[in-house]
Length: 51
Image (cartoon, rainbow, N blue to C red; front, side, top):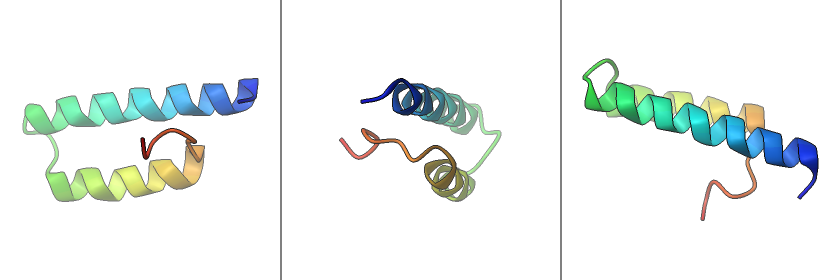
């Protein structure tokens, strides 16, 4: 994994963590989460997100 790939993975995982907290707090729905997650996957192209 290159340094750039590692940074993208960290940014993706941090974003997902925040989104899950937002679901828990009722700030977004699971549907909104799914839409945002799709966009994040396209933006950051994480290598390990499917594990």
